[in-house]
Picture 1 (tube, rainbow, N blue to C red):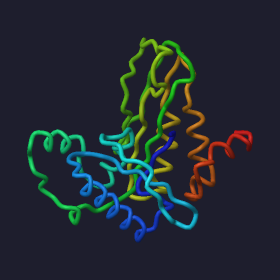
Picture 2 (cartoon, helix red, strand yellow; picture 1 turned 120 degrees about the vertical axis):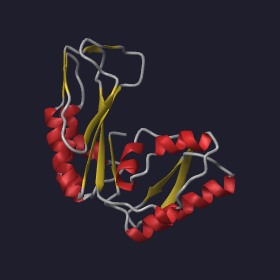
Picture 3 (cartoon, rainbow, N blue to C red; picture 1 turned 135 degrees about the vertical axis):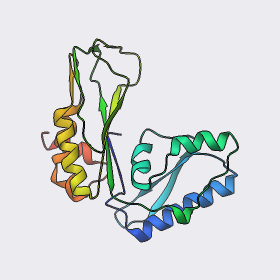
Picture 4 (cartoon, helix red, strand yellow; picture 1 turned 60 degrees about the vertical axis):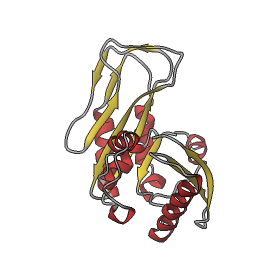
Length: 205
């Protein structure tokens, strides 16, 4: 996975409602309690198919938090402590658009310069610091660039600017690749599928 966004431009409000209802039924049927993620795959005709359920928060949870205003991490801890939810599904509304780009290392190295962008609704979740040595033994993700705005178009512009300002010197990474993906017309139109990177690379990018 490279980029996550919410809400998905490829899912209609009607299908989104069905997805949420199906996910809730799956959790109830299994007696599941606390934060979890139900994943589906959807075809071009908007038929969706259950793929898996992860009984944990996932890397992309910030985009859900930003568009719903719900601190999922906080509620995960509170539920584990026996605190009941003080809201229902009917209280959850999706507003605005959020995008998250995973910034990955391309091999080991030492961070000799590190600069992160700032501004309203722009954040970079990371463990990095200047002088950090990136080992070859673990997951390649260095951090998550996350932006939020009132519209998807504005979120894309904000992400392009944020990625352009992000500097992780001394090690190869995929910042430039992410900028190219965000700028791709297919991404801007929301017309992308699971084979996007294969066709993106074939196009010479």
